[in-house]
Length: 322
Length: 256
Image (cartoon, rainbow over all chains, first blue to last red; front, side):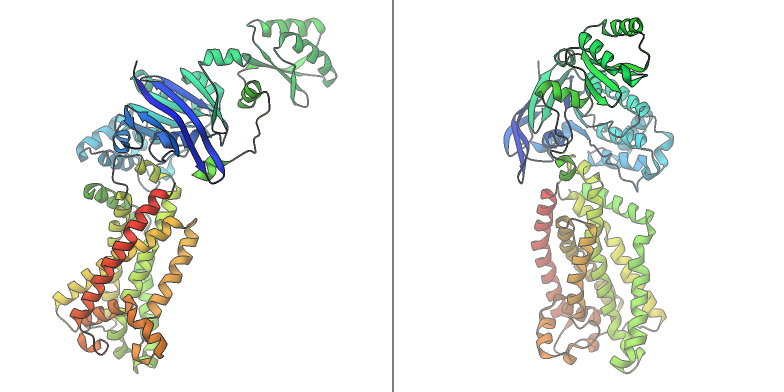
């Protein structure tokens, strides 16, 4: 099997901050790798190195068979990049943005226009194409940005937090587009802060923190390792909290936590955990105002993997580096 | 590289047309400067405003071009913060192409600035003292100087943290260069120590050249010739580009 992305021992330092402390990544052709981590973990730095925007201090990487440092130009011909901030030109229309990029990629004016029309159609932007992009909504900008990264029919696409800041409906649209991309055989490297997103799209997930890989597995195996899903219960009466805590302790894989004053949560791995909790709550006569089952949040992932809560204030390097 | 730069120059021009306020400094500003200097200082410097006009108008063109050349750094600094340049950098084009595109797109602004000043000057009584060939040469040489000077501003735009800082730094450069020259008064009226600076200031030579080509050699400082000043100006352009183009491209690569 051929590797579309292959990175070994990538390190990058900004002043006194170690953005990447030696990471290895491998993505097979046509597969999706989800890189999961908090702000400042080094996700964007890794993507920027793989997109030839930064050179690593040490380590090497090959993308589509080309070295990102020595064959940067060939790499740029093979990749598409969609950044955290939709990088479209606000003073140009959607059509002008895409035609310009098409022409910079070497297409003739006619070919660039044709490719633009195809992509606008595909991303449901045909009507908006003639408008200045500064009038676009956040979701439309992301779509145009994604379209812009696909003009050259790249074999490898980087999506750097493609849904951060989008509302849930728009997020689903982006997910559908990513799935369509993968169906055509494109290799995708996706960075995200949401396990749910990585779970929905990726074949494999790499979790990074402070520039190091702390886990790498398939979504299924990772979820098993993390204790599957999280069960949350909010009793109607706060006097019931101790009884609910006791009850959750029996079905959970860990001691229940209290993320909010009257909310209890516990990771569960059994498929029948929810049914058991429902029937036990009913048997004990405890009324609840909220009862839900969800995938663990990034904080919980870190707690499970490292045994400590993630230090949210550690760095804001990614923001600063841009 | 030329093709990519032209595509990106087209982007610069489109953006200008969409933001007409970008033309204020090349249209309204030279008119205000002309009115200000001709009618306020004309009497004091040259006895009356009509005698001052052929002396000062070439100077106002040069001053306007100095200011317009140095706004490119402000524009590029803002542009880069918006992320479009990340896209350019991930494309298989020359690293300098986005900068070359911005600089060559700005030629439109330079030509407008020169034209507006000349047309307005003519309306208030300026008459060319030379032939059309000299006037065309003046415009072309002025544009060449503007494009060369742009690279200083591009470098500042790449190094400064904010567009406000670019503006401040640019003004620091423009003021001693334009006022410390023979733009508004003959250099012979200045104290000796200042005359030393004026003589080596490249802007002085640009102004003398423009006076010679637009108003006629009799308006030039004593001991200068059109040919000599053209050589001075072209040499300054070569030095500006040789020093600041590589530095600006280097700073652009470094800017993350």
